[in-house]
Amino acid sequence: MKKKQFKAESKKLLDMMINSIYTNKEIFLRELISNASDAIDKLYYQSLTDKKLSVKKEDLEIWIKPDKEARTLTISDNGIGMTEEELEENLGTIAKSGSELFKEGNPEEKDMSIIGQFGVGFYSSFMVSDKVVVESKSPNSDKSYIWTSTGADGYTMEEGTRKENGTTITLYLKKNTEENSYDEFLETYHLQELVHKYSDYIRYPIKMMVTEAKKGKDDKSEEVEVEKTLNSQIPIWKKPKKDVKDEEYNDFYTDQFYDYEKPIHIIRSEVEGRSSYQALLFIPSHAPFDYYSKDYEKGLKLYSKGVLIMDKCKDLLPDYFSFVKGIVDSEDIALNISRETLQEDYQIASIAKSLESKIKKELEVLMEKNREDYEKFYKDFGTQLKYGIYVSYGMKKDVLQDLLLFYSSKDMKYTSLKEYVSRMKEGQDTIYYACGETVDKIDLLPQTERVKEKGYEILYLTDYVDEFVFKCMMNYEEKKFQNVAEGNVDFDTEEEKEALKKANEEAKDLFDAMKKVLDNEVTSVSYTHRLKNHPVCLTSKGPLSVEMEKVLNTMPTGEKVKAETVMEINENHPIAKKLKDLQKKKDKKGIETYTKILYAQARLIEGLPLENPTEISNLICDALAK
Image (tube, rainbow, N blue to C red; front, side, top):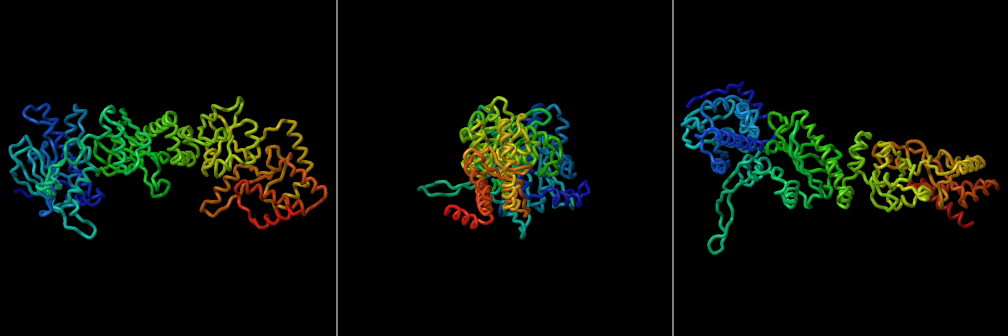
């Protein structure tokens, strides 16, 4: 037996490997299985050119064996194995990668999917074990060799007894502590979970003996040990599309993402080029219970060569597509040394950009081909799309604007901006909208009457973020957005405008008195022609609308804002004549009463609170009693 020291700067470097590089102890099994897969790959590819190697692909496999009594966990393979020199070179030198050297030496094998690249994965074993024994035999040697180490103090080398090519790694697990239970790595169910999570798509079978209950004599149940393959081997996204049924996709989705309903849309993509990847994405049929909470985590499962790298890679999805579930598998991504996280590089950004384009296109197809499903999706996730425009200050409108839907005065159903514009009247350069709590409430707003009478369609905005989105967008296909409750909406002829101007000038003293009664709650009071049947309404001036005021004042900042408003009175309504009569009689008390009642009515129509509802109730009763 030969006692040797590590060639690297031993203890300090190995301590860093064990305690700093890896953050999740269970990763060790993924690393050892990946190394075993690499070893089998090497043997198989070498056998293609070396006729002395007789290899049947169906015989290549990986075995896991827990031993509770000895507290050992063994991972073995029948791959390429290592000679004595290779054991020293690969395990005696930290961060020496045999896989990387093999790839460099075989550049012609373009399809070769060697997983290991840093040569440090093996050392993750020391996170869970205080002694590691490796026995390996190479086809290039008649003997097998055993490498043993308890950590940074070094290792020993001696001859072994293994006859078949391959490697067996035996981990002597650490004792349990208050913080960590290492016994879980001896439980077959937990080992199965880890294989399913991290290594389900390793191309070679990963096997283990498991205990199962079976019926024996006299129908009595008895426990027997059976050989079980733990991994799927072939990812569903690598199978030919024609060979995969929708039911298989649905089952994969519900199993992987713990949903009780099948997805509403499936996206499969394969891209080759500067950033090559395969993706299998799903649009859920409903929002998770925590979707709009701070606890929700977006992200796609990220695989590299079929090995899970990250359970939720948030960098692959923009926030406005955070509802998308699925996987991305790429051989091009740059990983950090532990393969737990990504290095910042253009590959991830490039894949994310490609996915964004694909998701947008697929959602547009869904809207066009299956409107019912799209509207169902939109009711749950439409707000997130709108936020994408709002938080980017309109920078993402080209990506998202054609995915938005709003209720329409045309048929009280969802319509897109593109559909609205396609129906616009000749010469119309404005997209009209109105805001409110519900479609029915908006439809009854006084400000909508004249617009509809003139034959213009109105978009009904019921989500609190809607108007902010339109403000950020500014226009759609060079058509400006116009709130019908803003003061600059005008359908009068020049003659009507002149007559209205004259009427307002004649009523200046009346309106000044009314504004004074309201203690400057409004910017001004005036007659209007925008109303048909209603006597009064509030219109806004400036960038802040009444609806935006309501939204902003519900925010937890404590700050209050106020829209500049005008109280407009329908010149053609009997109430206008009543006000003129009160002015002629110089009935200040009557003007005060009617002003307060009209203003309260206008605020109630807009969904704004009354400061003193009791006063208003008394004033109405007094007016009715006269």
